[in-house]
Image 1: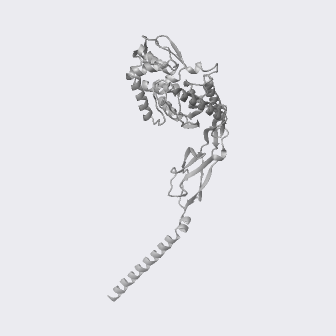
Image 2: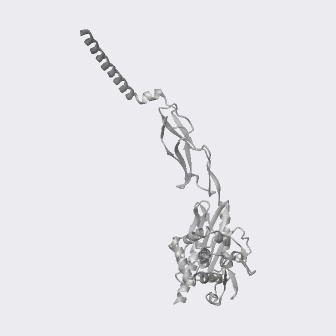
Image 3: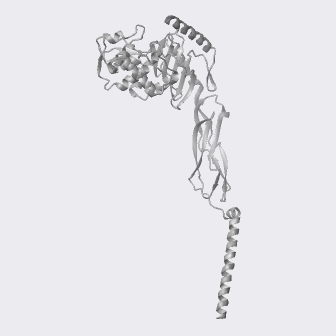
Length: 412
């Protein structure tokens, strides 16, 4: 029954791959084609925005990308990275025969620092097993902590069964959840140091290498600044990576590339970097003083005040961005007067692209507005009239009183 289930899963996956390869992928207004993954997410760390996603919320197998969680859980538990762990036959017996290993030797001692690098770079299941048992007493206890982390990081579509990513029912995640995990892990300098290494020499003199080199197929992988790969027949070829493009830092995760090529996920990653290089850049979307708005000034020495942008707006967008989607809005006072003082903030200019706020600029009153007596008299004529009438009335009342006083004095 289990064998039939696996066969059906493989058949479904092949059918899905054929369908996916016939569908063009879109990155905003720019078309991304020729990729082989079934699930992906590309995150711009610099602008804190997802640039591309494909089935990013779909629960699926993640293979050895599991070890991202294994590694960060271990790092945050370790007190001293120079402490040593003896690799035992019990640890070795728990490593699946088909799992990738770092080549740890039974009876030999390794520092925790060794085990971290051996877990991330060569994707060593022997290293992750040693970490789990030495830090939490058992693999089961360690897996519980992995799931606790998943809950803490709001990875709602993730569940772990083991520390290696070997295929088993109930062990899954999504690109969105893995991105949450990778963003969290990148805040840890030790994790980032290991993740961005291509090789590392252990304390016993053994050198371990990143799997991205093994799966490079002779391609130059120097643009991939950090990575963790993964593979099972059900998960396909998977990769998470860190890179830069046109001055922006990126994290990306792709899953489900065909299993029949050992390099296809790395080639996809390199093509993705090239795509961003060629299609995204800093573009000037607003020229200085290109936005002008007249605001009415009431009862003052000037009739109108001109609001304009003091700065140009440069943003990282696709080269063929739609200029019609750039919207500039003034939001602030729609009428001024002499009561508004020079250097007061009277509003702001907001710059939007495709409905999303890109930048804001404060509008500061840069002139001294003075009252205009003639305009005040015109605007408040009724108050002036009332004042005149009241003055005239008071005059009449006072004059009448004075007359009465004079008459009284005359009779005396």
